[in-house]
Image (cartoon, rainbow, N blue to C red; front, top):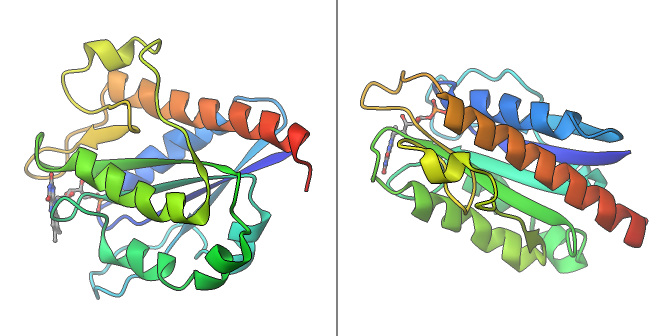
Length: 194
Ligand SMILES: Cc1cc2nc3c(=O)[nH]c(=O)nc-3n(C[C@H](O)[C@H](O)[C@H](O)COP(=O)(O)O)c2cc1C
């Protein structure tokens, strides 16, 4: 069984909805399990916690990691960064090395920094020694989307009031990302059994 950890922060629920779709993609691959986790918020923002809070053990146990955050000033949100900054032991021990990883985000402004947010989340994953997985253009939704979606990872454009529903192309790219990560993790598990 390949365990794919989907770790996200969400204040208004959009990033959580993407996490659920990505989980659906993960679980469409036989023998793969999606584990949804969130982080504690240091922003006193009233974010509703609907999944268990991440632990260091969750990180150790996973065979692949997908992290998601709303775009905050073109960067990942502080609560996710706060958690990552407590994981020096995971970095130093090489626990995450060689596992696949990918990223997703939501933003209310179409060109307001979704891609930079994705890249900001890739940086610590590269420091962990993880293998970054993106989205290939063989997935046609990437060519036709007029909203979210990028080769760097799934995105959802939430519009000014942050209440625009996830459209079909965005949804498809979330599902494909989960599926792709699960298949790759499964192959790596066979090569490198823990
Ligand atoms: C402090 C703050 C900064 C934000 N910065 C950006 C930004 O740089 N670009 C953008 O497109 N949206 C920005 N937003 C909007 C959020 O990214 C957007 O509402 C997102 O969909 C919220 O995700 P959630 O529903 O998971 O909480 C910002 C929101 C807040 C509260």
